[in-house]
Image (cartoon, rainbow, N blue to C red):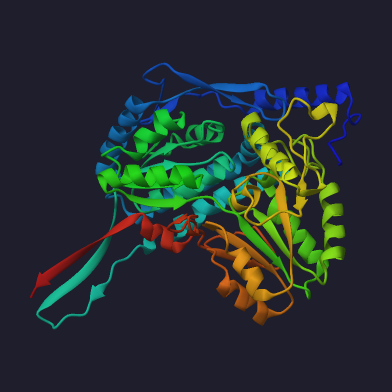
Length: 507
């Protein structure tokens, strides 16, 4: 397994170099403001509680951040309600200009945001730069359509005039995960603000720093109270946000189990919800597939962001005619990936976000091994001493495993791929759909008719053909089954942050 190799692979000096590099980067990019951002001001939590965010590469504490609770959520909701009195009636043109300003500010700090997410999350720097670019593009997209949320005139018998208008909900509560800290904040904030809502955002307790840096960068451009950020633990801050009577719309990205609880809480106040939840996505490789394309797409599907993607293509169905050659190539590609310091451009896999997530991933692998599965490559933490302080897991391929095994049915959220051979289409497509999730999928084939048939038969919100994890700006994203409700990223997302009012006038 390749690993980051400066100055001497596996040596104490390499480990020291990693620690020094991360410490120097932290001194440059960790934001000064580490409190709650409420009503346009930086404040401490009501209880004085704090949380530590750690660098998963070195295990060192990056920062100590104020940790909010129900009292802080209440303060933030009140600030958002007060701000909505003006912001809710601000013209779409003004909202458009604000979103463009936010995009400009993000772009101007692209390198700093990218390095900050590397430190806080562990993602490779090359991927982090892409995240920041996409975050800016996301704000630009919703700036571009902010003026397009229009109603309609409904035909009548002529004795009256019926029109509809789109109006914002008011205060929106948003909870984002740790796997794409800045990008997920952008996915949530941009459409909510474009539609005229105000926001209370709770970042993941593991990765709050880029959301705090974002608020510091746009503080002078943002009307007070329009966006409020309350870091904190789920039970302390997330739970009160999802059950607050002043919140009229909830948007959550995270696990299906927590998403179900969000729905239950929202039901108490009949609050609308958008949920982007888990996935256990299939990749289907046909015998006519270009093998290079198939291998590259599979590697991107499962090992991008160290497998910490809800869209991760974590179940591979390869046709038996090409299985042997394809698997030889895939194993070689996985073993050729560079695992190491995510601050280096050469690194393809960084650490998982925390010790808890590392141990959880390894436990799934061990359970599969105990139950007779074959570990085709990987299967443990890297043995390089230089990486021993971090939360690393080798890229892992598992074969000879039953499809009903928990490692196949449950979202591992790590660099772990289960492999299945297939011959008959009907049996294969049944297995591909035989999970509770339906977020994404991949099809690798040279036959466009075959691709379209498979895409129609797959129970998934996104089907990638001869590629994977591609997100053109404006492409709607969301899941079938227990992978969620609603769509992110597209024009319809703007509609989901508005409510329709009908006006019936007698003539």
